[in-house]
Image 1 (cartoon, one colour):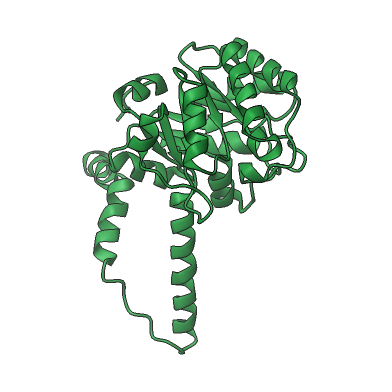
Image 2 (tube, rainbow, N blue to C red; image 1 turned 30 degrees about the vertical axis):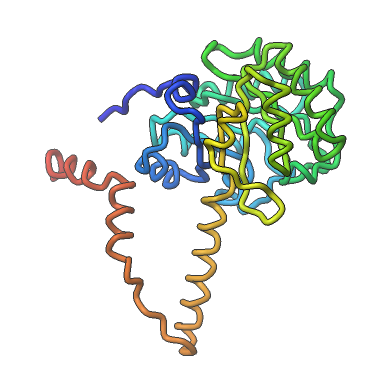
Length: 295
């Protein structure tokens, strides 16, 4: 059974304001995002590299590893999605190669960032260095020229907030828009005043926000950000954080059970979990194929 054609990310942005995208770290999480009714999702380096390779997102992964992970996730659902392109994994030639590779996988939006790969940090506000503005501007120009489909969105991300402050981050975002970037993401904002300043300064642009569940970060409702001018709200860590804690706690309990220290009781929601998993894996579809054509 063939899947329906993948809608564009632009159509998802038009259909929901703001567009809310959880981050899928594997094919199963992508399926569950679709089942929950989201119109799109995102693939970020941090969650996917953690789930697939057990690596932190500190510049260790190359384009090939990202492509391998994205391919599996993209195949799981026809939802439109955007993906983290880091700094393009090198110079302008590498940016062009990244755009071509991502488009071939069906990526609808590609983020290109200015954080320097050497010393790259997972949290934007802790970035150690950003490249000079002309370097990232040229990379964005290259990405725009390299895309084969004009519907592919090129999103300029700046991590300058954590290095040089909001004024510099806004100057960079304005340059990104001036050269034709389809959207901008000012990463690492730490207060609602920061969001308000970005929304006012970049009024009319497609603005992305990323919300983290941390004591030192704001946690506004998506509609609050929409009122400030943001068209896209992403949740980069909400799934992978919960998955990690659930796995850790279950394994600790199972270890104690194995050692005879504390008896582990069966999960009261195990049947619901099995049903949800079977649905996400499309088990009925495969069983139907077996019934029709199996020996």
